[in-house]
Length: 181
Image (cartoon, rainbow, N blue to C red; front, side, top):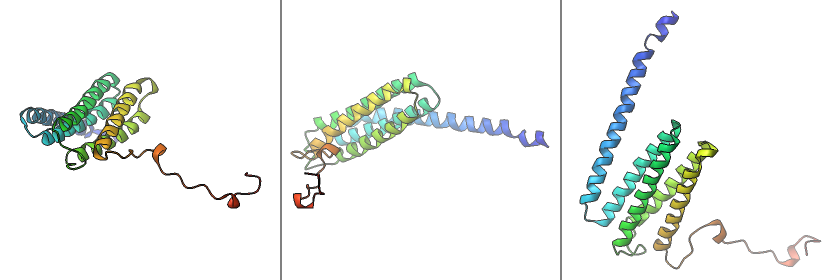
């Protein structure tokens, strides 16, 4: 009876391996299509959006690499992720559009940067301390880029951060407890 229970295990493992190989091949095909579309696209906003999609693919590959213990491959993929996000930002900057008046593309970049930073922060909690530096560095670069995007979206205003959050007013001296003067 014990033998019968485990008889189907090799079949399931083979099916799982084929599914993983198929999804990797599909991701490579999608990546190639995105690269081709980026190269041929004339509209900078569409180019930027495609770069964001490419970065999302790279982020998925980063997560897989680190989950499988391939820290060196993960670090290289992190570099590709950061470069894709920088390219997206560069396309939007070179478009000559004002983000505050025409936010399309800028908004999507801001959202993608915020999501990527959050996912990289989550990833860094699972990565070994000795392999964490590239993840932390990529997170910092994306946070800095997001600050720049926010500055373009909201010129003249300060980006929201804990240091810039409004503080509650201090209570009048009459409301302070005794001895707090």
